[in-house]
Structures are given as C-alpha cells and as structure tokens.
Image (cartoon, rainbow, N blue to C red; front, side):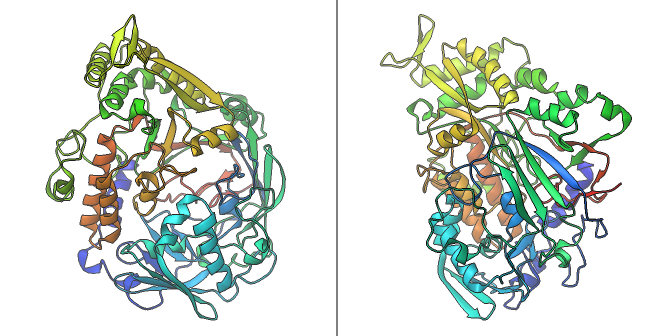
Length: 604
C-alpha cells in the first residue's frame, strides 16, 4: 500500500508550476489555503475525503498513556499537560487536512485572504463561533491569544509572533496580520494558532501551571480528571461547529477517556483485560507474538495496520553538543559507529523495521544517502562549503554492521575517530589529554522499555572502547524538567516531520533560543547553513526550489551527526475493540494527529 501512496505524494507536492500561485494566494477571501497551488477541496465540499460523513455518534473510546500529568494548560513550559487536551477542547482559525501536504480549510474563520507575496493575511471569523461556555469568539480573543502565546506560551509560538509587524482588527469579525519577514508559510502557521478566551485569564498569570483547563471552542470539554491518572473528555452537545463541512464525520465518540500507566507493559495488560479499548503497538516483534490472547482469538479484538507516506522523521539517542564531550563531530561519528544497529534491531524488533537513513527519508524530501549533492542542492550549500561537516556535500550514509555482537569493524572505526579527536585508552579507560575519562549519562524516561534495552546493548559496546556509560531513568515530570533545562548528556529523541516542513524547523534547529528552557533544539546545534536553508524554504514559491532546500537541510542535519538513529515504522499497528471502526479511505499521513480518535466511531 505504501507504494500506491507515494505517487500521489509527488502529485500533491509538486503541482504544475502555472498553478503555483493560483487560488489562495490572490487577494480575495478564500475557503482554504495551500502552501503551493490551490486547496484540493472546492468551496462547497461536504466533508474531508478520509472521513465517513455518515459515521454514527455515540459510544466511548479508552486510550492509554504512560507517565502522568500535572497540568491542564498545554500551551506553557511549566508542567506536563494531560494528553490531547488542546486538540480535544480548543480550536484554531483553520483546520488541517491530513490528506494533503499542507492545506488548511476554514474552521473558526469562514475565510482567509492574503496577497500574492504573502506579506499579510486576514481572517474573517464565522458569525456563530462560540466558546464552550456559550460566549462568542471575538477578534479581541484572537488578538489576545496570538500575543499571549507569542510572549508567554511555549517557545514554539515565539518565532511566528516575532515576524508580525502589525496585528489589527479590520472589521467586526476580521483581523489582519502584517509581516516584517519574508515567509510564505506564515499565513498557514497563524491559521493553526489555538484561540483561547481572553476573559478567562484576566488578572491571572497565563504562564503558571495549574488544573484549570483553558476554555476553548472545540468539540469536547473536560468532564473530570484525576491528576496523573485519568482524564475524561465529554462531547459538547452544544458545540457550535458540529454542522461544519470540515467537521462532518469527525469527533464521533460521546466520551474519550485517557488512562495513565507507569509503563507500556502495564498499559498492555490493561488493554488485554478490557480497561483500554485501543492500543498502539510500537514494537513489531511484540505485534507478532503478544497478540494471541483470548479476546483476539474470539474476534473481540481486531488488529489493524495503517500505512502512511510521511517522512521517517528522526528517533534515537541525541547528543547534547553543549557538553564539551560531544562538541567534536568526530566523537559524535564515533558514537554512531559504535552503535550496532543491525544487532539492536534484530534483538528488539526481530529486524522488522527499516532504519532511519536521514531526517526526511521515506519521502521525496529526503537526501540520497551516500551520494554527493548535485544541482540546486549543491548550489544552495556552496556558499557555506567551508563550514559544512565532511559528508554534507560529498555524501554521507550511516554505517552498516555485519550484525554480530562484536561489531569489530564499527568499533575499530570508532576508536580511530576518537584517537583523532584526542582520546586515548589508558589501563582500559578512554581519557582525554588531561587524563579525564570519557564518561557520560544516558537519560531515559521511566517506561521507555525498548530504548532502555537498546541503551543497555549500546553501553556494552561502548565499554569495549573504554567509555563508561551510566543509564538513568526518571519519572516523566523529572525527565521533562531535565530535558527542558538541557540537563542531559544523551537522551531519547523523537522528531516527527511532515511533507510540508516550515517554521517549526527553526524551532528544531535554529541557534536562536537554543539555551532557553524548553527549547526544541535538544542537540544545541548552531548552523548558519541550516538556518539559511530553512529561510530559503520559507521564502520560495517554487516547489522544486522548496524540495531542493529541504534536501539540502536534510544533508546538513544528517551529516551533523547529532543523533544515533534507530528505526521507524512505515505502518502503525493498532489493536482495538471490534466495535471501533475507521474509514476505508486512508489519508496520506496515515495514523497521524487528526486520525485516532478523530475520524473513528463506535458501531454495534
């Protein structure tokens, strides 16, 4: 199924050049907006193409999460918010279709308008838009939400706010944002900003963590919760947006419950006992052997595999380059060489999962591993040739071991690189020129069983190089606190990426704010070349140029050797109660935010 999806991706990602600036880029109100070309759906569409528009309403779904939560505000740095709180209860001006690379349709806003150069954007609110308490959504709420999130919210909101030169009300239901930076993605980014109720926060500190949920306009409200244990969402019977075409066939359950567990093993047992009605299995080896219990054999539990065509993203162990021990690229390359992926993959997944080759692998946006940069990719990188790490222009590919436990070839290469970086073995201990041993900590969250197993295999390999590794597991709250504060040497890293990378790339890889608590730039990278590729990506109106800039960025990131990559899944594995159904037509993003539980339903 993946191979049938990919040709569609190419068609969606590279529309005919004559249509690039058509439709949503003209200075006239539109029902939707696309990064390139026109929205796929016409103004009179009746539902999104991947939903069942006639899905019945009712029933409940119970999902599981590991860890806990100590906050009901998902928009600030402090605390760990309950899962799905934002998507369930708060809406944005526009909604995203997960069947198109980056296309938005009106939600709270009935229309969007921008000029050909996208130097400004104007949204017009729907007349009947209401918060869950019945009060109208106003332009004042929109302006307050944008400024508050951009100054007091999570760092991911700051970048776009700094690019707004002027925010103003232009009519009873209209608001316009004028930009100070060339960035063609900004109208779409702003369209996805959550809209909160200003009056709720008057005289209060928005940045303070607490257990009062933001008042939103979404399909659900928080019915009840037990801190750290469970949160229950109830579908709002008075939801203003239930009849919108964009929402038709979505948000079908009367109740969505999220239970929290200490680790994935406990959550799985809860699923087997019937406490949970759906379980996402991330380990293909377990998928193959652990699902032979009575409810599966009887047909009460169904196993579904959901393919996708999105980029692999990056998952693995990230090195904190703020630490001197990982500042040298040769050391980071040695860490990658010492990691015996083939052994780890065989041991933990049965060898079923493909390896992540680069940040945008599994898509047309990914670089060609091991092959030199050519054409526009090379031209974009050329001005930065002096600062690029080896392999960026010449071609870089991850090492492949023979799968044996000894991994002699990989360890020899690692030892050579470490020696070049000034590390030598003395009495079985790897030391620098000052006699300091090479020792570091791998920080993991409790419940990360697969990563813990991978880290233990990795630690044994590093010990053969004279490197001492301490593996520390902490509870979710402490893990978040330490990672937000950059208080780690090496830790588990996941960065999901899309077919339409944009402003979020600056949050992930820009040096600006990299030392600010909560920064998404976990590795602490500082690469003017990477930032130039992102800015070019944001400014171009040519899809071919866009793709070249993303591939060039992919080269910089991969050759940066910041992460020891593991594997990715080209399908999602979902086990669920037989009464839970999903549409036959799958979106190109597959099992992605906006799929489960949004388009599922309960059927007797």
